[in-house]
Length: 72
Image (cartoon, rainbow, N blue to C red; front, side, top):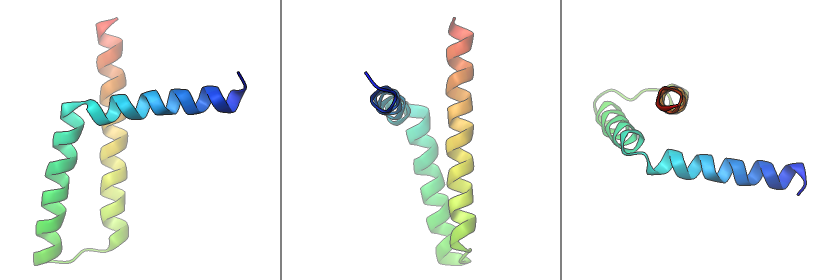
């Protein structure tokens, strides 16, 4: 297999693990509700919303790796 195929498979497995973790789903749902509430009451800039989502994703990835390392 070439490097691109391996990368795509690893990325697919990582994305599947990320999307099936209930803590990630809960965090994204809560963030979505909070952002919707804030957008209705006090609109914030789109880049601020995207920044919050990116931070949440990064923190969840770090949390998942830390939890996996603790199991081993």
